[in-house]
Length: 185
Image 1 (cartoon, one colour):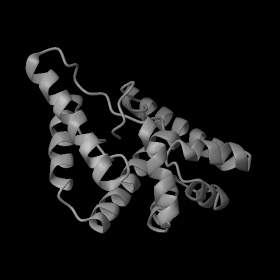
Image 2: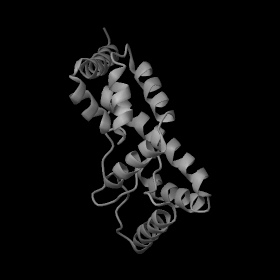
Image 3: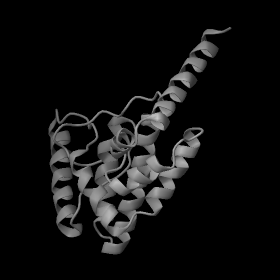
């Protein structure tokens, strides 16, 4: 048996083991774990109530369905929870990077003032050095949206964020690092 095959089987067992633990956890523990993926209690209860999941794809489908079913109050709750989450950004170790970080914070403040909630964007597929540019362009583009359009965008970004977190919760993928003190997810 090749080393690659052994490693692949080991990862599969680890992923199956994590999903199995989620499937068999007491309801309260499962809901608490799921709340780390999306801050809506109803979302977490819905997913926990439909266990067990035969595989990761079934769990992700349930997460998507629960995300699409968020009420306005559920969305508000989830957005409020995102205020403590962040992405690791490149350090502000140059004048250009410091200016970009300052611009991002100002844009975030303007966004929160305009829409009444934090700016959320899924950055899972980006390398750390690409995140700052994507955050700046995303927030700049979305600041011009109408309120309802932006609520729809925020809900979709939360769904994508929750999906990535579910993958990390139920598989062997490592969690993305957090940037202390920064509120953009």
